[in-house]
Image 1: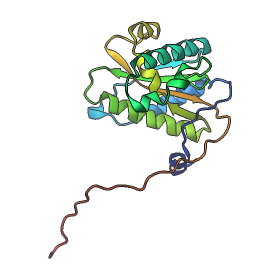
Image 2: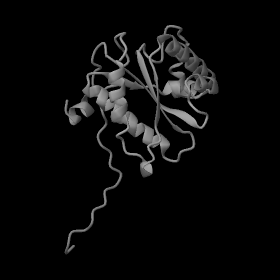
Image 3: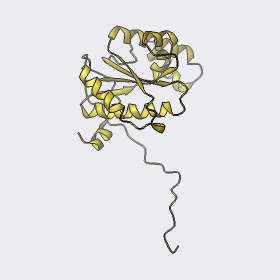
Image 4: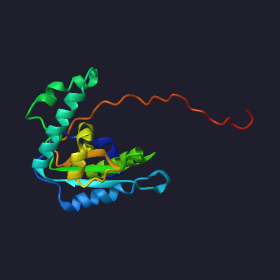
Amino acid sequence: MELMEAIYSRRATRSFLPERVSEDTVRRLLEVAVQAPSAMNTQPWRFVVIQDAARLDRYSERAKSLLLQRMGADDKSRQYAQRLSTRGFNIFYDAGTLIVICAPANGVYAQADCWLAAQNLQLAARALGLGTCCIGFAIPALNDPEVKTELDIPPELAAIAPIIVGTPRSTPPPVPRAAVHVLSWFHQPEAGQ
Protein backbone atom coordinates (compact mmCIF):
# COMPACT_ATOMS: atom_id res chain seq x y z
CA MET A 1 0.00 0.00 0.00
CA GLU A 2 1.35 3.42 -0.87
CA LEU A 3 1.70 6.10 1.80
CA MET A 4 -1.05 8.38 0.46
CA GLU A 5 -3.48 5.45 0.30
CA ALA A 6 -2.65 4.53 3.91
CA ILE A 7 -3.21 8.12 5.02
CA TYR A 8 -6.55 8.47 3.24
CA SER A 9 -7.85 5.03 4.19
CA ARG A 10 -6.78 4.87 7.86
CA ARG A 11 -9.76 4.79 10.21
CA ALA A 12 -10.33 4.52 13.95
CA THR A 13 -11.20 0.83 14.30
CA ARG A 14 -13.50 -0.18 17.15
CA SER A 15 -14.35 -3.77 16.25
CA PHE A 16 -11.68 -6.44 16.03
CA LEU A 17 -11.35 -10.13 15.35
CA PRO A 18 -10.25 -11.98 18.50
CA GLU A 19 -6.70 -12.95 17.48
CA ARG A 20 -3.66 -11.10 18.73
CA VAL A 21 -1.15 -9.38 16.50
CA SER A 22 1.98 -11.52 16.15
CA GLU A 23 5.14 -10.57 18.02
CA ASP A 24 6.98 -10.09 14.71
CA THR A 25 4.33 -7.67 13.50
CA VAL A 26 4.35 -5.71 16.78
CA ARG A 27 8.13 -5.42 16.58
CA ARG A 28 7.83 -4.22 12.99
CA LEU A 29 5.31 -1.56 14.04
CA LEU A 30 7.60 -0.41 16.85
CA GLU A 31 10.54 -0.16 14.43
CA VAL A 32 8.43 2.08 12.20
CA ALA A 33 7.23 4.15 15.18
CA VAL A 34 10.78 5.06 16.21
CA GLN A 35 11.48 6.45 12.75
CA ALA A 36 9.37 9.47 13.71
CA PRO A 37 11.08 12.82 14.13
CA SER A 38 11.61 14.12 17.65
CA ALA A 39 12.58 17.49 19.05
CA MET A 40 16.36 17.80 19.13
CA ASN A 41 16.49 14.08 18.26
CA THR A 42 15.75 13.13 21.87
CA GLN A 43 13.73 10.07 20.82
CA PRO A 44 11.96 10.03 24.21
CA TRP A 45 9.55 7.19 23.49
CA ARG A 46 9.41 3.92 25.40
CA PHE A 47 6.83 1.21 24.78
CA VAL A 48 4.65 -1.15 26.75
CA VAL A 49 2.87 -3.94 24.85
CA ILE A 50 -0.10 -5.65 26.49
CA GLN A 51 -1.57 -8.77 24.91
CA ASP A 52 -3.24 -10.21 28.01
CA ALA A 53 -7.05 -10.06 27.68
CA ALA A 54 -7.69 -10.32 31.44
CA ARG A 55 -5.29 -7.44 32.14
CA LEU A 56 -6.88 -5.33 29.41
CA ASP A 57 -10.33 -6.02 30.86
CA ARG A 58 -9.13 -5.02 34.32
CA TYR A 59 -7.57 -1.79 33.03
CA SER A 60 -10.73 -1.04 31.06
CA GLU A 61 -12.84 -1.30 34.22
CA ARG A 62 -10.38 0.86 36.17
CA ALA A 63 -10.36 3.50 33.41
CA LYS A 64 -14.15 3.57 33.26
CA SER A 65 -14.38 4.03 37.02
CA LEU A 66 -11.83 6.86 37.01
CA LEU A 67 -13.53 8.59 34.09
CA LEU A 68 -16.95 8.40 35.73
CA GLN A 69 -15.52 9.86 38.97
CA ARG A 70 -13.89 12.75 37.11
CA MET A 71 -16.68 13.43 34.65
CA GLY A 72 -18.30 16.31 36.52
CA ALA A 73 -20.06 18.94 34.47
CA ASP A 74 -18.16 18.43 31.24
CA ASP A 75 -20.86 18.00 28.57
CA LYS A 76 -18.54 16.24 26.15
CA SER A 77 -17.55 13.64 28.72
CA ARG A 78 -21.10 13.22 30.05
CA GLN A 79 -22.28 11.94 26.68
CA TYR A 80 -20.22 8.81 27.38
CA ALA A 81 -21.56 8.23 30.90
CA GLN A 82 -24.04 5.52 29.93
CA ARG A 83 -21.50 3.62 27.85
CA LEU A 84 -18.84 3.90 30.56
CA SER A 85 -21.36 2.63 33.13
CA THR A 86 -22.05 -0.52 31.11
CA ARG A 87 -20.21 -3.57 32.48
CA GLY A 88 -19.86 -5.16 29.03
CA PHE A 89 -18.29 -2.10 27.40
CA ASN A 90 -14.53 -2.47 27.03
CA ILE A 91 -12.67 0.76 26.25
CA PHE A 92 -10.17 -1.31 24.25
CA TYR A 93 -12.97 -2.72 22.08
CA ASP A 94 -11.75 -6.25 22.79
CA ALA A 95 -8.61 -5.71 20.68
CA GLY A 96 -5.94 -8.29 21.42
CA THR A 97 -3.05 -5.82 21.49
CA LEU A 98 -2.51 -2.49 23.23
CA ILE A 99 0.68 -0.55 22.55
CA VAL A 100 1.33 2.26 25.02
CA ILE A 101 3.83 4.92 24.03
CA CYS A 102 5.46 6.46 27.09
CA ALA A 103 7.86 9.37 27.61
CA PRO A 104 9.24 11.58 30.39
CA ALA A 105 6.30 13.15 32.18
CA ASN A 106 7.92 16.59 32.17
CA GLY A 107 9.54 16.43 28.74
CA VAL A 108 8.94 19.74 26.94
CA TYR A 109 8.16 18.21 23.55
CA ALA A 110 7.82 14.56 24.61
CA GLN A 111 4.06 14.41 24.09
CA ALA A 112 4.31 15.76 20.55
CA ASP A 113 7.16 13.34 19.83
CA CYS A 114 5.07 10.40 21.07
CA TRP A 115 2.11 11.37 18.92
CA LEU A 116 4.40 11.56 15.88
CA ALA A 117 5.55 8.01 16.67
CA ALA A 118 1.91 7.00 17.13
CA GLN A 119 1.02 8.31 13.69
CA ASN A 120 3.87 6.32 12.13
CA LEU A 121 2.68 3.21 13.95
CA GLN A 122 -0.93 3.68 12.85
CA LEU A 123 -0.05 4.26 9.21
CA ALA A 124 2.25 1.22 9.19
CA ALA A 125 -0.52 -0.88 10.76
CA ARG A 126 -2.93 0.29 8.05
CA ALA A 127 -0.40 -0.61 5.34
CA LEU A 128 -0.26 -4.12 6.86
CA GLY A 129 -4.05 -4.45 6.79
CA LEU A 130 -4.48 -3.88 10.53
CA GLY A 131 -6.76 -1.47 12.34
CA THR A 132 -5.85 0.92 15.15
CA CYS A 133 -7.49 3.40 17.49
CA CYS A 134 -6.05 5.83 20.01
CA ILE A 135 -7.71 5.25 23.38
CA GLY A 136 -7.56 8.51 25.32
CA PHE A 137 -9.96 7.05 27.90
CA ALA A 138 -7.10 4.78 29.05
CA ILE A 139 -4.59 7.51 29.90
CA PRO A 140 -5.72 8.21 33.51
CA ALA A 141 -5.74 4.50 34.41
CA LEU A 142 -2.41 3.79 32.71
CA ASN A 143 -0.85 6.66 34.68
CA ASP A 144 -2.22 5.44 38.01
CA PRO A 145 0.88 4.69 40.15
CA GLU A 146 -0.26 1.13 40.88
CA VAL A 147 -0.84 0.37 37.19
CA LYS A 148 2.47 1.99 36.22
CA THR A 149 4.22 -0.32 38.70
CA GLU A 150 2.42 -3.36 37.25
CA LEU A 151 3.50 -2.32 33.74
CA ASP A 152 7.12 -1.52 34.70
CA ILE A 153 6.66 2.14 33.74
CA PRO A 154 9.16 4.13 35.85
CA PRO A 155 7.70 6.97 37.95
CA GLU A 156 9.42 9.64 35.82
CA LEU A 157 7.65 8.41 32.67
CA ALA A 158 4.00 8.85 31.69
CA ALA A 159 1.73 6.89 29.39
CA ILE A 160 1.09 9.30 26.54
CA ALA A 161 -0.42 7.44 23.57
CA PRO A 162 -2.34 4.17 24.10
CA ILE A 163 -3.12 2.55 20.75
CA ILE A 164 -5.09 -0.64 20.18
CA VAL A 165 -4.05 -2.75 17.20
CA GLY A 166 -5.71 -5.72 15.56
CA THR A 167 -7.47 -7.19 12.58
CA PRO A 168 -10.64 -5.22 11.89
CA ARG A 169 -13.93 -7.15 11.70
CA SER A 170 -14.87 -4.81 8.86
CA THR A 171 -13.62 -1.62 7.27
CA PRO A 172 -15.00 1.42 9.07
CA PRO A 173 -16.64 3.93 6.71
CA PRO A 174 -14.88 7.17 5.81
CA VAL A 175 -15.44 10.08 8.15
CA PRO A 176 -16.26 13.41 6.48
CA ARG A 177 -13.46 15.91 6.83
CA ALA A 178 -13.89 19.66 7.04
CA ALA A 179 -12.30 21.74 4.32
CA VAL A 180 -8.80 23.01 5.02
CA HIS A 181 -9.08 26.22 7.06
CA VAL A 182 -6.05 28.44 6.44
CA LEU A 183 -5.95 31.34 8.90
CA SER A 184 -3.20 33.21 7.08
CA TRP A 185 -0.83 32.68 4.18
CA PHE A 186 1.97 35.18 3.74
CA HIS A 187 3.90 35.26 0.49
CA GLN A 188 7.06 37.10 -0.24
CA PRO A 189 6.19 39.81 -2.77
CA GLU A 190 7.20 39.05 -6.34
CA ALA A 191 10.16 40.99 -7.67
CA GLY A 192 9.05 44.39 -8.94
CA GLN A 193 5.91 44.59 -6.77
